[in-house]
Length: 126
Image (cartoon, rainbow, N blue to C red; front, side, top):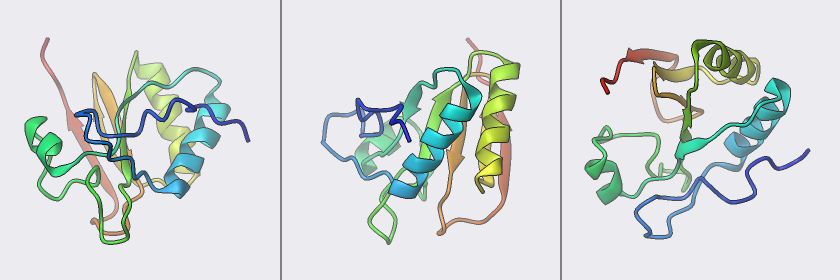
């Protein structure tokens, strides 16, 4: 399987060095990306506590390190409703059941430590 994310875009964006994405989630992302046939841009992956708070993330966010030592969430940039729908379908085929859908990103996670399934919709102005 090709690695569509060789630049390691899953690390914390604050520069702290945290990069702990669950390898199973990375595999799901690669398989899903291959199926859709178009580029995916990861907006957010692992987050340290400070960065999660700075971006307004939930206190118990799946972007933060969980009891197994991994983070389990990514936010993927959304370009339009069609590509968002194709991403959702590909991820669901591989067992992802936790999503936040917005006009700017698609949050997906495979956290075994959070309530399943989850589907939230958010609209961001601007």
